[in-house]
Image (cartoon, rainbow, N blue to C red):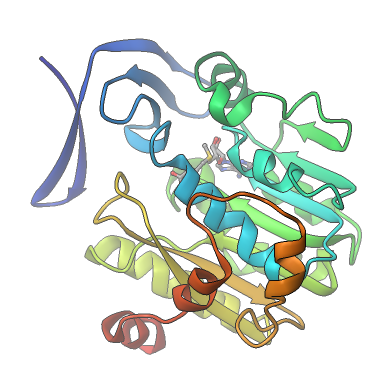
Length: 283
Ligand code: SAM
């Protein structure tokens, strides 16, 4: 029997049985492995960490995209940093009102391999005429982007280790603030509150964003294959409060069928457990 095993903390591991390895390579940036199994279908890992699988990807991609659109249904220009599997772009492109999506993924191999092995997320993304795909460092792209040029930035990155590290820095968040227009929203990976190392990443990311954006909130989602299953995104904005300003009726008019997201859950997802609130507020 073959088991993919991931270390979740010093004393805890998570395993998934797989039938075969579909592909393995070391790209210029990271180790990429694709597996096929029965419980989670096809899944891929980067540097030995679960990224996306066929069974629970809808949770992650619903939650990284739809809360921003329900808060500001007029979003037209979107920048995605990372997101090489295509799932975030797929969800953004469902909004016919979106005019332009720039996706900046550092590693072209991730996207090409997902086109081949994970069409559930990557199929159709490149072909959409509103889509501009760029294979370069997101940090450098944002530094050179004009002021107030996007309505929404989604940072769909790997963890703050290796290539993704720069996407968790104050300098990067400052550039995001500059590049967002006055109604702009930033959604980013906030890691997990549960295991100590992830919690420390979460707290540091939140502190940095809070020092730059007037509105900085954190919301949660349940992700079975990420460490502890309890994960967070950050929602930061110059104008919008995601709870007070939710436009549920406007969002319903889009008529999108979603399997995880709904506007009740939107509000509830910003209600955090006490230990998470305390950790976020700690100096
Ligand atoms: N859902 C995933 C997760 O949280 O586990 C993340 C999805 S996506 C595959 C993450 C992508 O971010 C990777 O393909 C990686 O190559 C990309 N990435 C990491 N650092 C980057 C950077 N500095 N600029 C652009 N893309 C980056």
